[in-house]
Amino acid sequence: MRYDWKFFTAIASGFITGTIAGLLYAPTDGKTMRKNITDVVADKTEKTQQLMLSAKHSYQTTTKIAGFQIERLYASVNAGIEEARLVKKKLEQRAREFEHKDG
Image (cartoon, rainbow, N blue to C red):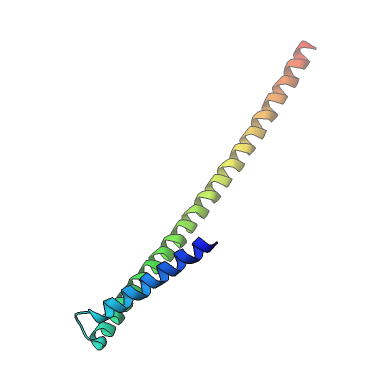
């Protein structure tokens, strides 16, 4: 537990020291730096929103396609079951016919 605290303190101290050093030795003044940061954040926000819209569209399209395929599969399975019932009925009928002929 004590080592965890030391590790956290070292990481936090390094982060704070690095931030301060970066601000002190930055090649631009604070106003320009804030504008640059704002521009980068705005750009990343816009790109993230575009990605989210693209992902939403892909999700909706995939969901519709999957739903359609599931409906087709369900119809095919039901048609197969109905065909199997007809074949069973014909086989039972032929079996009865053979029993009457042999009987």
